[in-house]
Amino acid sequence: MIDQTALHAYIHSGDFLTPLRLPAGTELALSPLGQGEYNLNYSFLHPETGQRLVLRLNTCSQMHLDQQIEYEFSALQALLPSGRTPRPLFCDGSRSILLYGVLVMEWLPGRALRYETDLETAAEILSDIHALPVPPDCALLSPASPARSIYEECLAMAERYLTWDRADPAAARLLEALIREIGQLPLDSGGGPRCMVNTELNSGNFLINEETRSYLVDWEKPLISEAAQDLAHFLAPTTTFWKTDTILDREAAGRFLRAYWRAVDGRFDTGALAHRLPLFFTVTCLRGVSWCAMALREYEEPGRALTNPDTLRKIRAYLSEDFLRHILENYVRRDFLRGVMT
Image (cartoon, rainbow, N blue to C red):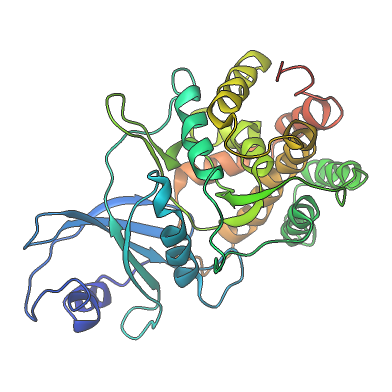
């Protein structure tokens, strides 16, 4: 749990007030905004400008970075010209008062994405982000073989579960089958042009506004990679089922992809995108269930800073024998995306 006494001391310290151009003694009131697995968010009003801002606390780095909050801050700086992401104001990775990294950024309006109505809007948001030129000094990681990198991340996460004495035998067998079959795919094959990608595209990370611009937030794990990585993550059943209990059918997947193709037409080279998408789609399914396997062990052992009962419920659903077998039979052994882009 977050130490509220330390948090109160921090937001009234010079480390926090000075970058906001506020004098010592300024009183601020935080309102809980939302919690992820490794981040806690609050909103507050700047008392002089009246602007609503977001305070984001990072408790752990999923990317195993010593400077996780600085990484996210630099990503938001690079993404700002897209017009689809929040403006970052400052970050503080000193951990001098709080034990966590701190990021302050502008608050943006909007509701979570609805797959039934918002696929075209999501496609437009991603097209604006993917079409943005990568700055020459961009600090984001750029794996040499993105599909292989995802697979190796899955191996490390799955290993945490498979070596656990409380792992469910049926879940372990199916997870091992997924690892074995996906490991036979051409993970090191040549790729397409690189762009900035989010890699975490669940519905709650979109802020949808019917009358104005819509946005994509939560840039905890961005990379310089192929656009196919984001498209696959957006469509994968392990993503859509996470927050909404929705699994997209082929018609919906095709509608999203056709909208994306229209939105990016002429803005960057998409020649390899259709060819690369099925590979990323399949390995992304493994990523979703292997993360859940790792996370279940974390939840069952002491020491986790943030917990969420809804997340734990979903984790257990993903590791059920029925769900894992569904992923194996319908998304790994079959080409779900065949023909949906035409």
